[in-house]
Length: 258
Ligand SMILES: NC(=O)c1ccc[n+]([C@@H]2O[C@H](COP(=O)([O-])OP(=O)(O)OC[C@H]3O[C@@H](n4cnc5c(N)ncnc54)[C@H](O)[C@@H]3O)[C@@H](O)[C@H]2O)c1
Image 1 (spheres, helix red, strand yellow):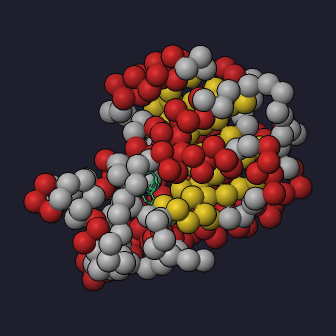
Image 2 (cartoon, protein in one colour; image 1 turned 90 degrees about the vertical axis):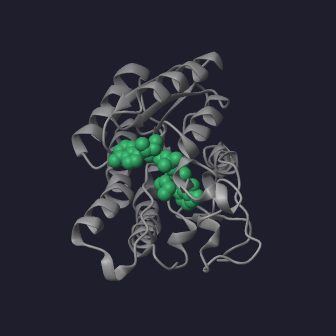
């Protein structure tokens, strides 16, 4: 992996939440950042680009859908064209989906696995192709979840999508080892982002309180800010992290022990 010049990262689902925190954290590491998110998030994306530029880094955003291969390939191509290469891919975009299995439909399955699993696969694939071509190694990071380690009631499709990311992380890490590319994922517990907003939060104690009522969680479980995940990613992209690959790293305040 190149350590001498400014590296370049793409972060999918980077307009808000964990992705936004990662984008800002990587900008502190002399990394130019491309943020990828869906149509409708342009004002968040524009303001994030300005915040990254204020840190002295270069940035731009791409509007697209992680389930669309042309959008992901286009983002990688534009990144290479603009910044000269790609060193880090953070396949962060994801959607939460809660419904008992008795009510889940094939359409639900395709939507949740589409964004959370196919979206990660396409980001892994196009980042890997580019990094192999460059021949200077790289870092690929995916978004799994505590729900990718342990089943929880009423989130069967979300769990399926996040367990799949964990498997894909292990297999891809083995395939890319010879190219000096590490592949890891983060598996957070409750992180206080727009994803965990519930209309009844105010009645139960604020952001994340309804999600925390899930009986699968240990009593006393708390949420954390997105910065805890961003800091883990900041480690995974360091030269010293070359020895960490194929891992889906739990970061959940002690909910689940591997
Ligand atoms: N917040 C948590 O408690 C938590 C816990 C475990 C894992 N995660 C995972 O971390 C990742 C980030 O979560 P977050 O809490 O920041 O969520 P969030 O909802 O706040 O942000 C997710 C971002 O992904 C984008 N996105 C959704 N679908 C997309 C698509 N098809 N194409 C491109 N972008 C898309 C959204 O527009 C949004 O900006 C997700 O994969 C999530 O499953 C979150």
